[in-house]
Image (cartoon, rainbow, N blue to C red; front, side, top):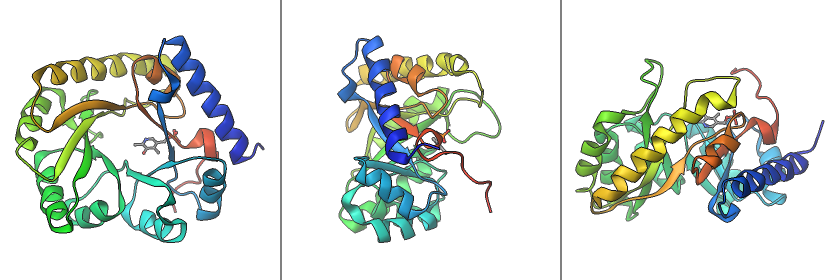
Length: 232
Ligand SMILES: *Cc1c(COP(=O)(O)O)cnc(C)c1O
Protein backbone atom coordinates (compact mmCIF):
# COMPACT_ATOMS: atom_id res chain seq x y z
CA UNK A 1 0.00 0.00 0.00
CA UNK A 2 1.26 3.46 -0.79
CA UNK A 3 1.60 6.14 1.84
CA UNK A 4 -0.66 9.16 2.02
CA UNK A 5 2.25 11.35 0.98
CA UNK A 6 2.83 9.20 -2.11
CA UNK A 7 -0.86 9.19 -2.99
CA UNK A 8 -1.00 12.94 -2.59
CA UNK A 9 2.03 13.40 -4.85
CA UNK A 10 0.39 11.20 -7.49
CA UNK A 11 -2.90 13.12 -7.31
CA UNK A 12 -0.99 16.38 -7.66
CA UNK A 13 0.80 15.08 -10.74
CA UNK A 14 -2.50 14.04 -12.27
CA UNK A 15 -4.02 17.46 -11.51
CA UNK A 16 -1.09 19.16 -13.16
CA UNK A 17 -1.23 16.91 -16.22
CA UNK A 18 -4.98 17.44 -16.65
CA UNK A 19 -4.58 21.21 -16.31
CA UNK A 20 -1.78 21.23 -18.86
CA UNK A 21 -3.86 19.16 -21.28
CA UNK A 22 -6.62 21.73 -20.98
CA UNK A 23 -4.21 24.64 -21.43
CA UNK A 24 -4.87 25.81 -17.88
CA UNK A 25 -2.47 26.98 -15.20
CA UNK A 26 -2.35 24.12 -12.63
CA UNK A 27 -2.28 26.79 -9.90
CA UNK A 28 -5.90 27.59 -10.69
CA UNK A 29 -6.97 24.16 -9.46
CA UNK A 30 -7.22 23.72 -5.71
CA UNK A 31 -7.18 20.26 -4.17
CA UNK A 32 -9.70 19.69 -1.40
CA UNK A 33 -8.60 16.53 0.42
CA UNK A 34 -11.82 14.87 1.55
CA UNK A 35 -11.39 13.49 5.06
CA UNK A 36 -14.76 12.05 6.03
CA UNK A 37 -14.18 8.93 8.19
CA UNK A 38 -10.40 9.58 8.11
CA UNK A 39 -8.72 9.63 11.52
CA UNK A 40 -6.87 12.77 12.65
CA UNK A 41 -3.48 11.01 12.62
CA UNK A 42 -3.90 10.22 8.95
CA UNK A 43 -5.09 13.74 8.18
CA UNK A 44 -1.93 14.93 9.93
CA UNK A 45 0.12 12.89 7.45
CA UNK A 46 -1.58 14.72 4.61
CA UNK A 47 -0.99 18.07 6.32
CA UNK A 48 2.69 17.22 6.74
CA UNK A 49 2.84 16.29 3.06
CA UNK A 50 1.56 19.76 2.18
CA UNK A 51 -2.22 19.38 1.88
CA UNK A 52 -3.76 22.72 2.79
CA UNK A 53 -7.48 22.35 2.27
CA UNK A 54 -9.71 19.64 3.70
CA UNK A 55 -13.33 18.74 3.02
CA UNK A 56 -15.68 17.32 5.64
CA UNK A 57 -19.26 16.04 5.33
CA UNK A 58 -20.47 15.91 8.92
CA UNK A 59 -20.41 18.74 11.43
CA UNK A 60 -19.78 16.71 14.58
CA UNK A 61 -17.02 14.66 13.02
CA UNK A 62 -15.38 17.80 11.66
CA UNK A 63 -15.63 19.61 14.98
CA UNK A 64 -13.54 16.97 16.73
CA UNK A 65 -10.90 16.89 14.03
CA UNK A 66 -10.59 20.65 13.76
CA UNK A 67 -10.13 20.78 17.52
CA UNK A 68 -7.22 18.32 17.28
CA UNK A 69 -5.61 19.58 14.09
CA UNK A 70 -6.24 23.25 14.62
CA UNK A 71 -6.81 25.87 12.03
CA UNK A 72 -3.46 25.44 10.27
CA UNK A 73 -5.53 24.08 7.39
CA UNK A 74 -8.52 25.51 5.59
CA UNK A 75 -11.67 23.48 6.12
CA UNK A 76 -14.50 23.26 3.59
CA UNK A 77 -17.90 21.79 4.27
CA UNK A 78 -19.08 19.58 1.41
CA UNK A 79 -21.89 17.50 2.94
CA UNK A 80 -25.58 18.14 3.29
CA UNK A 81 -26.06 20.92 5.83
CA UNK A 82 -29.07 21.07 8.09
CA UNK A 83 -30.24 24.51 9.10
CA UNK A 84 -29.91 23.75 12.80
CA UNK A 85 -26.16 23.17 12.29
CA UNK A 86 -25.60 26.48 10.52
CA UNK A 87 -23.98 28.07 13.55
CA UNK A 88 -21.27 25.41 13.73
CA UNK A 89 -20.72 25.48 10.01
CA UNK A 90 -20.08 29.22 10.07
CA UNK A 91 -17.65 28.90 12.97
CA UNK A 92 -15.68 26.03 11.47
CA UNK A 93 -15.57 26.41 7.71
CA UNK A 94 -13.94 28.83 5.31
CA UNK A 95 -16.31 27.74 2.60
CA UNK A 96 -19.55 25.75 2.42
CA UNK A 97 -20.01 24.01 -0.94
CA UNK A 98 -23.46 22.60 -0.44
CA UNK A 99 -26.03 25.39 -0.31
CA UNK A 100 -29.19 23.84 -1.64
CA UNK A 101 -31.80 26.52 -1.11
CA UNK A 102 -32.50 30.10 -0.10
CA UNK A 103 -33.65 29.19 3.42
CA UNK A 104 -30.24 27.72 4.25
CA UNK A 105 -28.43 30.76 2.85
CA UNK A 106 -30.70 33.00 4.91
CA UNK A 107 -29.93 31.07 8.08
CA UNK A 108 -26.17 31.17 7.38
CA UNK A 109 -26.47 34.91 6.83
CA UNK A 110 -28.23 35.35 10.17
CA UNK A 111 -25.55 33.38 12.00
CA UNK A 112 -22.67 34.99 10.12
CA UNK A 113 -23.96 38.48 11.02
CA UNK A 114 -23.99 37.45 14.67
CA UNK A 115 -20.49 35.96 14.45
CA UNK A 116 -19.14 38.99 12.63
CA UNK A 117 -18.09 36.89 9.65
CA UNK A 118 -18.71 36.96 5.93
CA UNK A 119 -19.33 33.35 4.92
CA UNK A 120 -18.20 32.06 1.54
CA UNK A 121 -20.65 29.65 -0.03
CA UNK A 122 -21.14 27.70 -3.23
CA UNK A 123 -24.48 26.72 -4.66
CA UNK A 124 -24.89 23.01 -5.15
CA UNK A 125 -26.67 22.47 -8.43
CA UNK A 126 -28.66 19.35 -9.11
CA UNK A 127 -28.07 18.68 -12.79
CA UNK A 128 -29.06 15.06 -12.74
CA UNK A 129 -32.58 15.63 -11.53
CA UNK A 130 -32.26 12.52 -9.39
CA UNK A 131 -34.47 12.20 -6.36
CA UNK A 132 -31.55 11.13 -4.14
CA UNK A 133 -29.49 14.24 -4.78
CA UNK A 134 -29.50 17.47 -2.89
CA UNK A 135 -29.08 20.71 -4.72
CA UNK A 136 -30.83 23.57 -6.40
CA UNK A 137 -32.55 22.60 -9.66
CA UNK A 138 -30.83 24.24 -12.61
CA UNK A 139 -33.92 26.29 -13.50
CA UNK A 140 -34.00 28.05 -10.15
CA UNK A 141 -30.31 28.88 -9.71
CA UNK A 142 -30.58 32.39 -11.14
CA UNK A 143 -33.57 33.23 -8.98
CA UNK A 144 -31.82 31.99 -5.84
CA UNK A 145 -28.70 34.00 -6.68
CA UNK A 146 -30.83 37.12 -7.02
CA UNK A 147 -32.36 36.44 -3.63
CA UNK A 148 -29.04 35.66 -1.93
CA UNK A 149 -27.63 38.85 -3.41
CA UNK A 150 -29.66 40.73 -0.80
CA UNK A 151 -27.93 38.96 2.10
CA UNK A 152 -24.97 40.95 3.36
CA UNK A 153 -23.01 38.31 5.28
CA UNK A 154 -22.85 35.51 2.72
CA UNK A 155 -20.97 35.55 -0.56
CA UNK A 156 -21.68 33.17 -3.38
CA UNK A 157 -18.29 32.29 -4.87
CA UNK A 158 -19.46 29.81 -7.45
CA UNK A 159 -21.14 26.48 -8.10
CA UNK A 160 -20.75 22.87 -7.04
CA UNK A 161 -22.14 19.65 -8.47
CA UNK A 162 -22.13 15.93 -7.80
CA UNK A 163 -22.96 13.97 -10.96
CA UNK A 164 -24.73 10.61 -10.75
CA UNK A 165 -22.32 7.90 -9.68
CA UNK A 166 -20.56 6.02 -12.45
CA UNK A 167 -17.38 3.96 -12.84
CA UNK A 168 -16.73 5.65 -16.15
CA UNK A 169 -15.18 9.14 -15.73
CA UNK A 170 -16.42 10.27 -19.16
CA UNK A 171 -20.02 9.85 -17.97
CA UNK A 172 -19.48 12.89 -15.74
CA UNK A 173 -18.28 15.16 -18.54
CA UNK A 174 -21.72 16.36 -19.73
CA UNK A 175 -22.60 17.38 -16.16
CA UNK A 176 -19.34 19.26 -15.73
CA UNK A 177 -19.87 21.01 -19.06
CA UNK A 178 -23.38 21.98 -18.00
CA UNK A 179 -22.14 23.47 -14.74
CA UNK A 180 -19.51 25.45 -16.61
CA UNK A 181 -22.13 26.86 -18.99
CA UNK A 182 -24.34 27.81 -16.07
CA UNK A 183 -21.36 29.53 -14.46
CA UNK A 184 -20.83 31.57 -17.65
CA UNK A 185 -24.49 32.56 -17.82
CA UNK A 186 -24.53 33.67 -14.19
CA UNK A 187 -21.26 35.57 -14.51
CA UNK A 188 -22.75 37.56 -17.40
CA UNK A 189 -25.65 38.68 -15.23
CA UNK A 190 -23.26 40.46 -12.85
CA UNK A 191 -25.53 40.07 -9.84
CA UNK A 192 -24.19 42.15 -6.92
CA UNK A 193 -22.22 40.11 -4.33
CA UNK A 194 -22.45 36.99 -6.51
CA UNK A 195 -19.15 35.98 -8.03
CA UNK A 196 -18.55 32.96 -10.20
CA UNK A 197 -14.86 32.30 -9.72
CA UNK A 198 -15.20 28.77 -8.32
CA UNK A 199 -16.40 25.50 -9.82
CA UNK A 200 -16.33 22.68 -7.30
CA UNK A 201 -16.53 19.46 -9.30
CA UNK A 202 -14.68 16.19 -9.65
CA UNK A 203 -13.88 13.43 -7.15
CA UNK A 204 -11.37 10.55 -7.12
CA UNK A 205 -13.00 8.88 -10.11
CA UNK A 206 -13.42 11.87 -12.39
CA UNK A 207 -11.32 14.84 -11.22
CA UNK A 208 -9.21 14.91 -14.37
CA UNK A 209 -12.29 15.24 -16.57
CA UNK A 210 -13.56 17.95 -14.20
CA UNK A 211 -10.31 19.90 -14.56
CA UNK A 212 -10.52 19.65 -18.35
CA UNK A 213 -14.00 21.16 -18.03
CA UNK A 214 -12.95 24.03 -15.76
CA UNK A 215 -12.98 22.84 -12.13
CA UNK A 216 -11.20 25.15 -9.70
CA UNK A 217 -11.87 22.95 -6.65
CA UNK A 218 -11.58 19.16 -6.87
CA UNK A 219 -12.79 17.11 -3.92
CA UNK A 220 -10.64 14.00 -3.66
CA UNK A 221 -10.85 11.45 -0.85
CA UNK A 222 -10.24 7.82 -1.80
CA UNK A 223 -7.33 8.50 -4.16
CA UNK A 224 -5.46 10.08 -1.23
CA UNK A 225 -6.59 8.16 1.84
CA UNK A 226 -7.63 4.82 0.33
CA UNK A 227 -11.06 3.22 0.48
CA UNK A 228 -13.34 4.33 3.30
CA UNK A 229 -14.68 1.79 5.74
CA UNK A 230 -18.42 1.30 5.47
CA UNK A 231 -20.30 3.71 7.71
CA UNK A 232 -20.51 2.52 11.30
C1 LIG B 1 -17.00 11.76 -0.22
C2 LIG B 1 -17.12 12.92 -1.14
C3 LIG B 1 -16.11 13.23 -2.05
C4 LIG B 1 -14.85 12.40 -2.23
O1 LIG B 1 -15.13 11.21 -2.86
P1 LIG B 1 -13.96 10.22 -3.35
O2 LIG B 1 -14.62 9.40 -4.37
O3 LIG B 1 -13.55 9.46 -2.14
O4 LIG B 1 -12.86 11.05 -3.87
C5 LIG B 1 -16.29 14.37 -2.84
N1 LIG B 1 -17.38 15.14 -2.75
C6 LIG B 1 -18.37 14.86 -1.88
C7 LIG B 1 -19.56 15.75 -1.83
C8 LIG B 1 -18.28 13.74 -1.07
O5 LIG B 1 -19.29 13.46 -0.23
